[in-house]
Image (cartoon, rainbow, N blue to C red; front, side, top):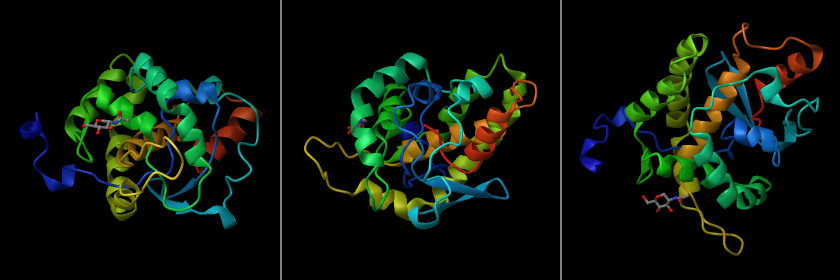
Length: 223
Ligand SMILES: *[C@@H]1O[C@H](CO)[C@@H](O)[C@H](O)[C@H]1NC(C)=O
């Protein structure tokens, strides 16, 4: 299997996680919310903003479920996400409250393992792109967005490589903490944010709450 991995170095990403926002499944759970913040500059190259001037610190401005505003496509099988959330949800909630180098999201890594997309600190970019595109094969309004977001998110991960690698080397800081490589969470969370922020007009519910949430969701991760 390893032999079939992308040979091109630029197709690999080893980068840092900023927590994880894995899918609508978790958005619905809303157990954990907005922790770190990505500010999009030019929409494609997010920049991390830390607590001091973190516009995300107060959480979302409204209590509306993001899925009611924009039914973003499930990029990873829902059963897998639910299963991984059950295994790692508690740990992830704790980790998201911690300062310092962002810890990898085990929910995301668990999902990438279950779909055979992850090994040794790398995601199979080509296969993952196919899986994402397959998830929207009946949703033409999402296709270009998903394709572009995948590219943008891998680019983001490349920019964050140092931080991602540092996150992968952290030691457990509480009993039972499992350290995961941040690459999976970085990509899945980035995808979720991009899709929500750029929700096609044809499926976006226009009302005050949803507009506020979209504004917030375009700069802050929503889990
Ligand atoms: C994913 O699989 C790797 C082995 O390739 C393993 O070391 C790691 O613990 C797994 N991660 C999770 C979250 O299950």
